[in-house]
Each structure stands twice: as C-alpha cells, then as structure tokens.
Image: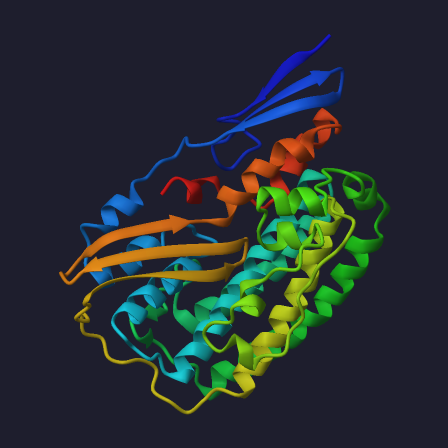
Length: 360
C-alpha cells in the first residue's frame, strides 16, 4: 500500500522553503514531486526602480553564498551595453574573488553533506577550512559574505603585495588540508555506504533535463562556461574541467572536491600574474544607452544567466535572472525514485540547492 510523506515546505531540516511529496511503499520511494515558489522577493521588479549602481547592491543579495557571481554578471551586462572595456587587472581580481567564493561554496556543501550522513566531526573540520577562506575574502574585500567588490567598469579594491603573500600562503595551507580531506571522503566506509549508488542521475537524464554546474558534471556532462565560453580572462588560466561518471551523490562529492583544487590553481596563477593596469574606469554613474545583453557565468552552483535591458534612462528597463537551481531542481524526483526515505534529505541537498535564488 502506498503512502504520501510530505517534506516541507517548512521543515526543521531544511534551510529554505521547498515542498517534496514522496509516494512510498514501506521505506521505498516509488515516486516524488517537488514544489517551489515559497519565497518570492520581487528583486527583478525592484531592479526596475534602481539606478545601475544601486542595482549592484540589490542583486548581490539574491544569494549570500554566490553574491559576487550575481553582482559581477549584472556588471558585465551594463559594461557591454555601455561599450566599456574592463581593465585586465580588474578582470583578474574578479576571477580571484570568484574562485575563493567557489571554494567557500563547495566547502559549505561538503560540510553539510557530512552532517546529513552523521559525520559531524568531518563537518566541523571542513567548515573550519571554510572559515579560513572566508577570513581571506574579508581581508581582500572587507566583507565576509556580500563582498561589494564589483563596480561598473572594474573593482573597487586592489590586492597589494602583503595581501598577495597572505593569499598564496592560505592557498598552500588549504591545498594540504584538502589532500587529507579528499583521501578521507573518497575512502571512508560510512560515506561510501550513504552516497554510492544513491540518488543516481544518468548522463542521459542530466542532458535531457538540462542539469547545470557540478551537479551535471557529476553525471559526466562535460560543460563549464569558463571553458565553453570564457569570460574575464579565464582563457589565460590552465585548469581542468572536473567530471565523474558514477552519476550518484558520491560523484557530486568527488566533483566538488576536485573543483576546489582547480580553484586553488586558478587563484595562484591570477595572483602571480596580476597585470599592471588600472582597477576600474571611475566611480561615476555611467551613461548607459538603450540596449540589451545576456551574460553567462559559471557560478559555484552552475550556469547563471542575466539578461539586462536598458532604455537610455537612469534605471533598468528589465533585469531577468536565471539561476542554476531552477534547472537542477527538476532532476530531484528522478533521483529520489528507488531510494529510501532516509536518503531523501541527502538527495535533495546533493544538487546544492538555493531555492531562494529561484524566487527573484
């Protein structure tokens, strides 16, 4: 006999409002449905009433984990419409902050995953390393979460020699700790039992449903905007596109661990080769002509897209935000089917969801 088990939309184990309806027989999940849309904030509408500088502050608050990605992608749209050429040093600094943000995001997810499977000592260790990354972000930008580093035409703060040395030292220390973390996560029996063969999303299903980011790459889909359509000097850096072919929760752990190593590699290259150019094109509100532009960005969770339309006035005519979770969420029912109720929370979390991001 089948039963319906509701999870959410408001549940003590979920950080954000989402409703998953599980149709189960005993402990076995036979089918599932996912419902979103519980946290609409009207950010796209508010952006139509703000000038271009005010909008940077607004969109940076779409997500507290990938705030730099949102602000940067919006700035790229305005810069393109206005015909601005961002100085090379500013591009490199944007890349450095972006990869630090990716490390911070992946370590946050890895810690939460360990917590869900009941490995709290590893959860605390991973979040301790994440804390060091956030301290470095604060040292470089002045803030731990919403970094306010982007302005239209570049960045607002430089990286001096002392900060460069501190950042390189932090990357060396993090890399050594990540090697031990990688060996543990890949070889630990408890993590293997809870993640291998759990929440499978085949490569075919990932492509058919349009999965994005680390979630797609863990299903062996070779896609990354930084490689496929390089922006902001990413073509200058040597780094690998990380994929894994087991297509389960374990693969999502492995891909995120590997991507941390690649982010460290990018940060080192950028710090050691910072171009000697200005940081920005000035702090005045730019005169932006009528136009529109679509910017693609590889945020920590995946493919982020902004479409900005201007009409020649002081405010945006339209700002449309498309986030990775919007494309990854439809894969959840497929991953849940055939698994047990005990694994449902881990499977939903394995896409690294940001359901608040979806309700802009």
